[in-house]
Image 1 (cartoon, one colour):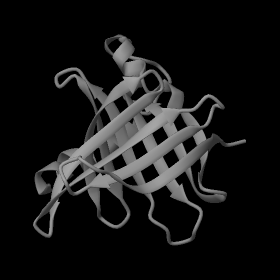
Image 2: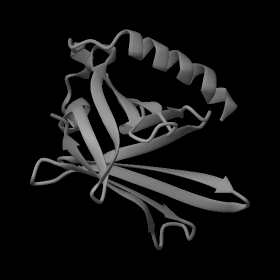
Image 3: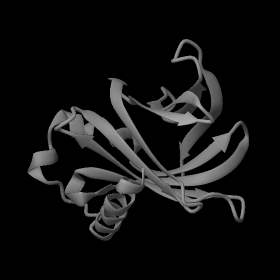
Image 4: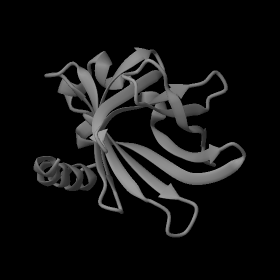
Length: 169
């Protein structure tokens, strides 16, 4: 994980500094547009309670999306992520860095139009844990973010967060 920190930091700085509305022709393929439904600023709720504001904006000439998480609760965990389609791996990549020093890397795919799901495996306390989450566009225009974990190789999943994103006014 340490080997990812320096390149990730460089990517975050570069993509943050160069967030532009223009799009590089290399990133005009349909795969790069699979996440366009998430662009914008969203109020994030767990049940009826607003827990955060999430912003998703084009970056790197349209080849990536910068995700900024801003909790409502003072002192809550903040963070940024870069979402980008990898032509080389033919999948989506999600790199997260939080204010507690945490970093995560997920790989994902579009399961259907308006639904991209990410997954990663990590060993903790000698147990392999699978983590997955997805952003799914709902018929009412909201986006559902469902986070789940598994400790039995994916045979069963436990919901860790079920969030509803509504476009901010």
